[in-house]
Length: 170
Length: 328
Image (tube, rainbow over all chains, first blue to last red; front, top):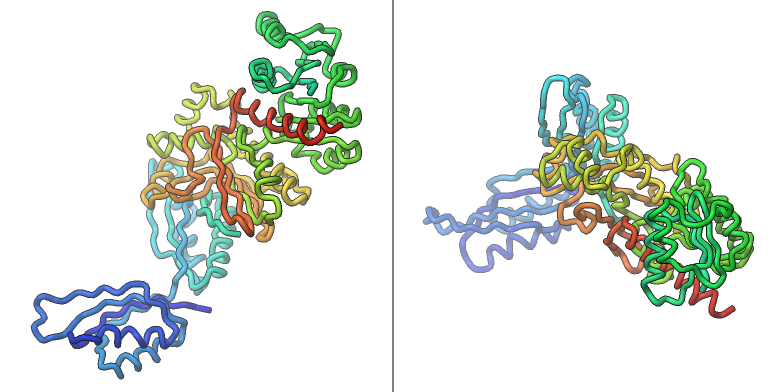
C-alpha cells in the first residue's frame, strides 16, 4: 500500500470542540496523525484558530478527507503532499565528478518511484577521491530496496565505494 | 581433567598461565610449540615450562613434536591454539582430526579449520562421541556460542550482526573521534600493537568474514564458505565520509551481517546510528543476535588478548568436563 504524508494548515473557529471535530475525519478516512501544531496567532483578533497537522494517509483518500473537513466548517489554507515516504541515507566515495554524478543521481530519479532528495559533498584536491552523502526517498520499502540495488550496480560500474545504512530486523 | 595443549603463542601461554594460577581441576599432561614438545602424564610443571619457553624460545625437547604429543600423551581434551591459516587450515586441521580420531574432545581458537571444515569435523566428532568446541574463534572473550546454544535454546535465530574485528573498530573509532585519515589511524593502531605489519587480513574484512562464516555454519548449518561472503574493507574510507555520517548523528563501522531469509552474508562498512548498541569503542567486539522469541540481544566484550581468549577456551573445557568427562 502506498502511504502519503500530508501536511495541512487549517483554519477553524476558536470555540470548544472545534479541534476535535476537525481531527475526527482523519481517522474516518484511515489516516494516522503524526503531529498537531496548535498555535494561537496573537494577531488574530477575529476568533479563529490556526492548526498545522501532519498525517499519513492511504493513497486516494485525500479528496474524501478534504470533503469531510469542509463539511465540518474547517477552512483548508494549504495542503502539502509528500508522496515519497521511505527515507534512507547512503554515502558514496570515489571519483564522483569524473564518473558523472548527475548520471548517478538520475539513475535513481528516473525510476519514478525513488529520488535523491539531498546531496552533501566534499571535494578535496582535484585528483583525490571525494565523498558524498545522498538521502533517497521512495514510496515503499520494496522500492527502496530496488533503489539501493540500482545504486550498488552503479557503484560497481563506476568503481565507487557505497556505504549503506545498517537496517536491522530480519 | 587432563589436557594436551598444542601451540604456545600468546593464546597458549594465556591458557597455561590461567590453568597454573586457578584451581580449576585441570592438569596439562602434554604441550607442544612449533619446534618441540613435552609430555608428563602426572601433570606438567607449567611455570617451569613457561620459563624455559621464555629463556630459550622452545618449551620441550626437539625429539617430540605436536603429532607425538597428540598420539602419546594421556589426556581427555586437546586444546589446539596454533596460528590460523585461512587457506588450508593447517597445521591445526590435521591436529584436530588426529585427536578426534583418537576419541579426544577438542577445544580450539583456530579459525581456519572451523571455517574450512566445520561440517566434516562435526560429523567426525559425532561419530567418535566427542565434543568439538570453538568459543574462542569468534568475539574473543564473548561467550557467543554458549549464548546461542544454551541461553537461546529453542529460539529461531533470524539474523546476526557483529563488530568482529577489533583492529578495524579501533581504526574507525579513531577516524570518527579525532578526524584522522585511514592511513594515520592505521599507523597508530600498529604502534599500539593492534595491527599487524601486513594489515590486509584485518582491514579488507577477511578476518571478520571468516568469523561470519563460522557463525553462519554453526547456527544454520548452511555450509557457506569464505568466498560466499560479499566483502568490502575499510581501507578506502575517507575522513570526509566519516564526517558526513557524523553530521547525521551516525558513524561508520565495519559490520558483519548474516540474514539467511534475505540471502545476506556480507562484511562491509555501514552507516550506523551513534547510539546503536553495536557502536563500541576501540578494539571491543559486539554481536547482536536477532531471534523469534528473545528478539534482539547484544553481547559486548574484548575480542582479543591472551587472558581474554583463555577465558573462552577454559569455558569450553569446563563445559566438556561437566558434560562428558566426569560422567564417564
